[in-house]
Image 1 (spheres, rainbow, N blue to C red):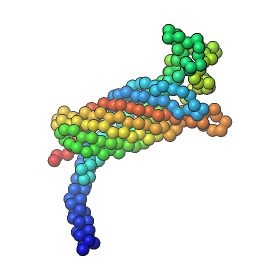
Image 2 (cartoon, rainbow, N blue to C red):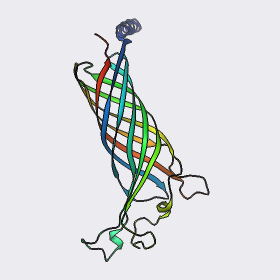
Image 3 (cartoon, rainbow, N blue to C red):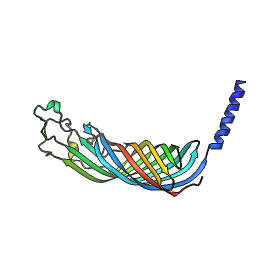
Image 4 (tube, helix red, strand yellow):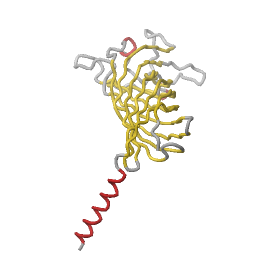
Length: 244
C-alpha cells in the first residue's frame, strides 16, 4: 500500500510538473547600467590594503527564454567599464611613535580600468510583467586592461620606515597580463512596469582567476588576482515582449 501510494503521488507530481515545465519565452530587453565598485588584489607576498573605490557602467542585454515551474530563466550579458585596483595601508600606527593626528599619512591608490564582459545565467522568482521580482545570477567574466593611474603622495626613494607593507616591488611594476578572467555571481531585485521597462538593483562578487603580474617561480608575486564587489542599478526596456 505504501509503495502504491508513493507511486500514485509520484505520478501526480510528475503530471503536475509536466503541465508547468517549459513555458516558452522570446523576450529581449536592452538598457544601461551604472554603479559602485569596491576592489582589492590578493597579493602573495601579502600587501595590506583597504578597498579601492571606483565606478562602473555600461550596456546590458537580456534574453528571457523560458518559465520553468515558477522560475523565470534568462541569459544576461553586459559590456562595462570598471575602475578596479588596490589601496594600500601604508603606515602602521602601532609602530610609529612620531605619527600625530595632523600628520598626513602616506597613501598609494592605484586604479586599473578594464573593459569587462560578464555573461550570466539568471533565475528569477516573482512578478514577470508587472511588479517585483527577485533573482540570482552567475557566470563567467572576461576583462581587457585599458588604463593605469597611480595616486600617491610620497617619493619611492624616500619612503617612511614605519610601513605596514614591507613589499614595495609593485610600485615600479606595470600590468603584465592584459587579459583578465574569472567568475561573477550575485543577486538582486527587479521592478517591472508595462510599457515603461524594468528597474534592477543588484549586488555581485567577482573572483579573478588570472593574475595581473606574471606568476612563474622566478617572478616576485605568486598571486595577484582581483576580488571585486559591485553594486549596480540597471534600466532595461523591452525590444521583444512575449504576449501572455
